[in-house]
Amino acid sequence: MAAVLNTKSITKQGINYHVSAIEIPLYLKVLNFYDRHYNYKWLAKRITKSLETKEEKVFRLFQWTYETIQPQPKSLPVMDDHVWNVYVRGYGVSDNFHDLFTTLCNYVGVDGFFFWVKAKDSGHIGMSFVKLEKGWVLFDPFRGGYFVNKLGSWATIEEINQHNWKLEKLIPAEISESFYSPYLENLPILDEIGLVRANTQSPMNRLLLAIQKMDF
Image (cartoon, rainbow, N blue to C red; front, side, top):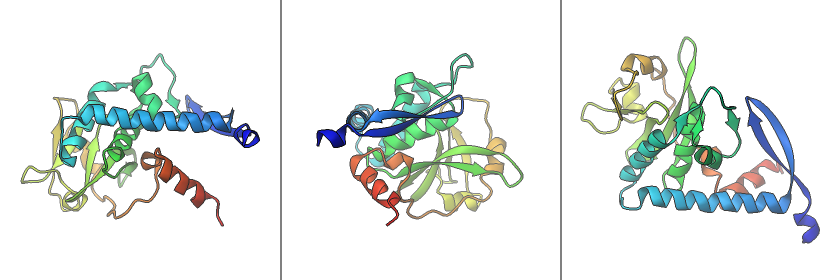
């Protein structure tokens, strides 16, 4: 057992978009993984402790991410490693906001993941997709934008594809519906998402992902 736990493993870290593979003992990689897992559980519970419904919890996590994480300072390196470190650092680029928000959503029992949405002509922006009882809805925790239908409830992908949406913002910001429109023209219809970065921070899903990668 000691020999197995001391075998070499790899963890990856991106600094300014250059990814390095760092050797680490297996036991330390496992300990770090469980440390992050229990910290996610603690953080999600602390943020949403007084709330009951999934909708309330998701919106609070959305607000908290937007208010707590700061945009990437130009003087500091762009980091891409573990999602938990986004919270520890307190700053990040746009996809870091989405990674943290959707990971915490999974820790309150709501499926969520981060996806790059492409415009028909060119360009793309990150979006957080969250699955509630009514369907998949979209959030942008980096810019503080989200989308509602004509009745004022969160717009599903289907409603957005039918042009039944308008932009809502957490605070007045320099974003408008015209900014999002090119990216919301042809959203994918989603069902189950499988194993993704946001839901493989827990032990069971990480084990399933490892088995999946064995390619029997």
